[in-house]
Length: 512
Image 1 (tube, helix red, strand yellow):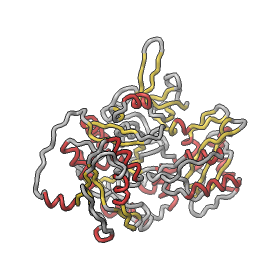
Image 2: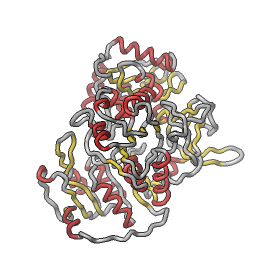
Image 3: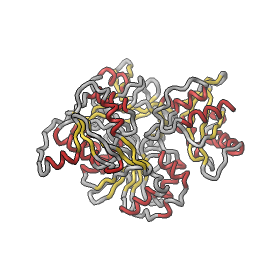
Image 4: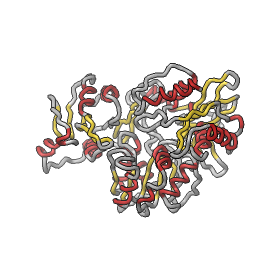
């Protein structure tokens, strides 16, 4: 997350060379897999970067990955760490600053591209385990992210806007680089963690730079809640006029904390649902136009035809759970999976047939509910639905009920095999500072779930843990929690940022 990254992306776009950004936290093997899949002939990387104040060697990992690339590659290395890390350049590797000096003053004319020419590939995980190369194109994607940046995030050229995502993910592409810069605004980049050197690091930046919009993830907001409101209270956040969330559904309690302690109850909160594949936001309220409903993303954006349907493709009644679908194309949509049109069709498109017509819809594999006002509440992935005695319970609903209990900072819910119910609810809970994971809190969690959803949703077990297993991008690995609940053999945990916590949780469940 250094300035040379968006510079390289925009340089590629200028000359018509599609780019594929690989998240720095991925392994050497992940880099090689993506470079082989995309036939990448050039790698732009850095010698290292800082994490919690410590310099980390990145070039060694990049070199290891290059060793498994099946074709020749030219590499450009940015010297980020100066004297803190000595590094050698091998054959075919070039120093970034030397190249800049060699070509000082040179101008490169932009290369004309058709609207449907590829702008970039973004690799995302798939159900088969093999990453999918999502293909986004020049005209539709750029027009869509610039429009949604303006309409939803209210970005103006004079703003200082901050999306706290990593550019290695689609949110960083769309709402750090392409959308805001297309509108001529100042976009903030931050290298590091939100709690280093202190837990008020983000609020210090908002204060120092008079940030006008903050777009962040519910995972981060839950961490801010756990740390306490005293950290944002140290700083003047009055420059903020809009708050946004992205990446996963946000529970009402976290939404209200964000609205109160960060936005001073004066900033609209836009809770945005979208995906790598959609390119940009699809479901959210428009600030100053739509009523905000904590926990509900909102209605589809103008021009987006999204519906919540049952297994037959028929619209569900308000309040009923169903499947989120999109039945009309939109400018920012992925065009295909790179060199795999068949997988593109099989993974994303659902055909509903009846006696009158055949209809294909985009199926993002998310469950959802819709209310009488047309507001959609996303319940999480379809495989994040627990079927207890024939009742489909969304993990998002369950987790919101648990996090609504005083003393709970974060929760993850999975289904475990049950001889009678088919599946039972297992809740993994992190407590807030100052609260103990004891029988009293466990009882209040069970009561909170029963009050919010009903006795059918009563957790079979509540397991307290100081941490939950998360990927390096901050997503909870519910699959591992499910394996623990079922006593199954655990798969590979090396890609987690905190693999040690898995065994600790496993011991607690075994002890229970």
